[in-house]
Length: 288
Length: 329
Image (cartoon, rainbow over all chains, first blue to last red; front, side, top):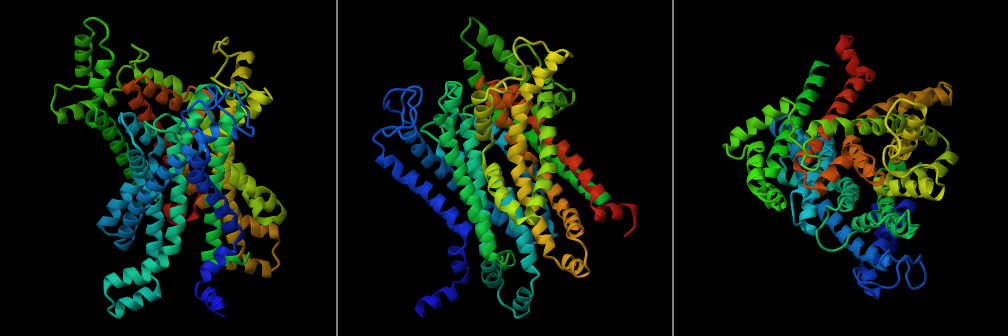
């Protein structure tokens, strides 16, 4: 009885945990996160250590094979995954926060000066190819840590969220229940908190997932160009090393294909969670 | 329409202004003082310091007040003077860019246009056929989730190395000279194919997913149901849905141009394809700041022009904008 009550109250959660796409996506995503957390603990090597002979294809001792110098690819991948996930998470969170504020303010004051100004800024950032901007910024920073990289990535990633949040705020603002609160003299802050923010939560959550996705992709792109954090290892750096040492031409497919595949799986899983949640929060899609 | 276009043009002009300002400001205000870093790199030779210092101070106009430097930067920009490349001294940056930009066009334009058209068609097909949907959607998700450079590596490995069908780097063979004969054209196309395919396939997934969702949404709208009740064929309903779905896809194309160009930069790196992206990254490795700035500027100009083109196309295909222009509404 209590269980039934619980699901009834948390209807969305029920649909979320019974949605195939969400389950599949979450399962892949969690296993990759676990890999990033547990991986460095179970691997006997360090990512810069020479673990054994070079050119080893995946085997029982070297799960993902070894690099040309005999470094263990599995170790590099799990350590790199940690850094990449961290950068993606930090950047995604910062970008979402900026986008949320900008989009909300802009939607709230729609048609007036703050909106015009902020949307202009958003459009400018949207037109500029973010990677080139990132390249310019990173190229002139001789030392970059994880936080610096996250900040740079976030600086170019927020416009998507801002636009999405703005349009959502606009449509919510003119809803009848908001008007009702307004004419009932409910304080402004409470309207924002209870009527608008509460209804926007699901939407913002989905935008956040996409944002996380985008920031992972751009930070890996930067790392691949050698413009990631100056110290440590990252997924992009593993791939860059592989390309620099001509791994594919030498037949060492495991050095490039496996790290990239994990990255792609990570992004696919986030997409799945996103579309699944879309169905959860949007009953019209759910019925199909 | 006038207002629509004016607004867009204003945004583009401001973006351009912003990009140029950034281009001017970053090397001057970045920590680590790039100019002195540059100087220290080139001072190994005797008396090099004095010559170089005067060269840099002159080209960056560092001896003038900031505001004057800034106006000078704009002035030389409009005179077509983007400085002289350090890595390919004494070639002017503009000449290097002029040679490289062709390669960007040649892979980007066909990839964008074809993947957009084919992606939309495939998506529409997938939206109406359940069987096709189950088969195609995972593929689309895989394509759209692949990072460009990894997908490029995958294509390069499968088609270039395992199957050995295509050469894996550069725009043409080292033994060839660029001239108009059949052998060169074939060689050129062989080199062109894999970068093109990468850009084409990665984008394809996104367009298909977008269109598929559009079609599903449209076939559930009231007008579609009304048509169905009138006995209209599925084909007709679908074609209306397609026409309604295509507009957001055009807007989507404009929005994702930046991402596509970023993807092209990474793809060019993998295939050593000598476009602007490849040029820019090799310029970074050699600390060739003028060249980096030139590439940045031209990549942005490219995106701005493409955006503008799409805006004009949108004007013609969106009946609302079109009719407000000719005064029918």
